[in-house]
Length: 243
Ligand SMILES: [Zn+2]
Image (cartoon, rainbow, N blue to C red):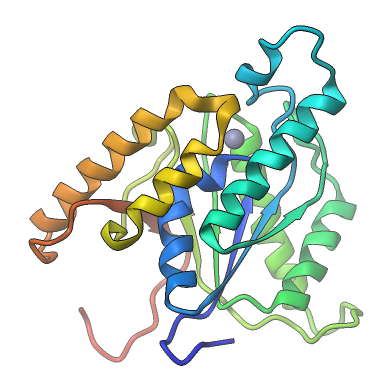
């Protein structure tokens, strides 16, 4: 589960095809650059609600939008060195059902992630995002259950982090960790550039990374930090020292 550099296998659960890019591409690249393994699960393609660029093209169909979004996410995943998993559950609304929880739980058991990333607990603008987070935590619980039959071993207790939502102050998001993504920021930019259906967000997330970088330095990080991503813990950190 852990590489020689200490980076475990990372699992990112994304409600839509591009959420992982805006919010966690930097950390995904940090992990893979250190020879860690990163898996991204897209619960949907964001075909209805998060593909405005694709829908502006004449004669567009739902299937075609899904193809475009899948290709964009695959291109971003390739840039970041991540393995992509598409569950095609539909969006706006993302469904909530037991079958999806069980499918996600089985995938967690198969992949045995050391760390899980997902959405914020609340988002009054986008109910698919907290639903994805809720599905993730429920799947983690099921994957830990000794009595739940599976072809794979039970899951341990990987820490779960929430990546930064679009309007954090509206989503009960307060950063617990600022990750330095300066060395891999070029890869994040390339991944963002692959999301042609939402190109209006690229500048926004470049600016956000720069602001979080300033805050990382202000909070005691090295002066070399230029870009950062913010994360919020779900569970307490286990450590021998306070640091
Ligand atoms: Zn989304």
